[in-house]
Length: 165
Picture 1 (cartoon, helix red, strand yellow):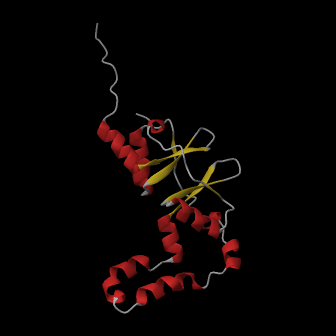
Picture 2: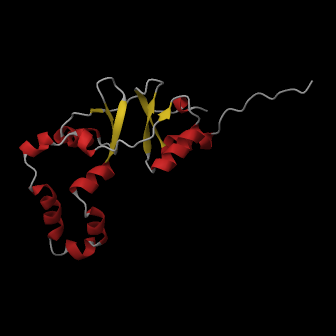
Picture 3: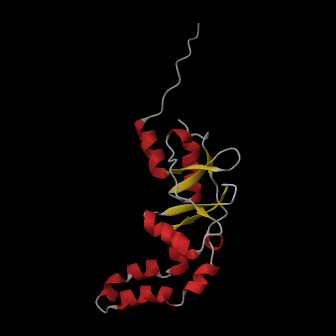
């Protein structure tokens, strides 16, 4: 079974010159956990995950969650999250672009790759999703670890038996 058999073809994308506000708006509006970033020729040039945004804007997020019980009674949790955005005004939002926050050291998969190849790339990148590109590296879809696992659990078509006559 190939990537093209299970990939998602309806994909929300972001141009590399999108502003930080555009990035955040796309994540919030579409309830996304990742976004492929494309250039003017529709080629994938990067990928932004929700974890990238957490690392940038809420670097202490995981630490805060670990200490949630200590913070919740004192009302400090809201103030910690509010402080993450306190210094960011609309002027700065326009100066930070998708290209500034995206991961550009990224592997993608081809629609002709096998599901096992896709699974290996997903594991190597430690992402839940990866862009799927054609031979010109233009975005044609997304593949997720969930889609790969489901397809593998359902079973792949077997090749016809070859007779030895």
